[in-house]
Length: 181
Image (cartoon, rainbow, N blue to C red; front, side):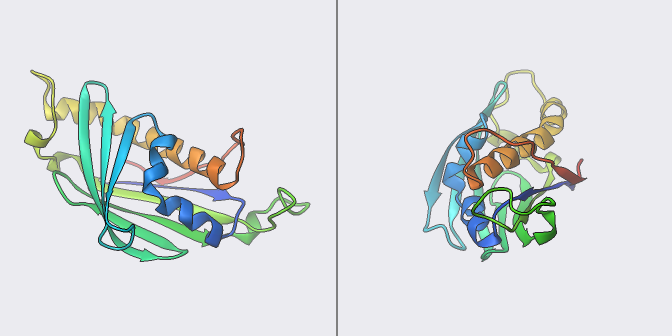
């Protein structure tokens, strides 16, 4: 199993951050490869999200299920078809992250750390479920996709922070990569 774990600080309390990480339908705004999201359920535990992805010569719909929610700390998910993958969004208070001199803006004097984790087995993919171009092997696809996964996760988290903080321009978001494939 491969694992991506990264985190960053956002200048809002966990109660304000959590609704953003929980809102999967907004995720296409954070990445060019996620085209749309269909929701089956009310967003609580058991809800299914069909995430339609497109990149290079590939298109695929990942089916993700919410398996646990503990607001405002954690949302766990897992893919329920075609590939063995699971993950978690975690939000923890981080009051020591406020820069010396106080609040970053006039409204907030606290911070949170957002963690994104994905654990997956790229070789567990059902080859018939992915529309591979003729003469392209799954091994070749894995070698092309894996290096891009970390970059994609970083892009999503940076754009998510911009939304959470209500910024029209991105700030310099420092990502901590705790683990990568």
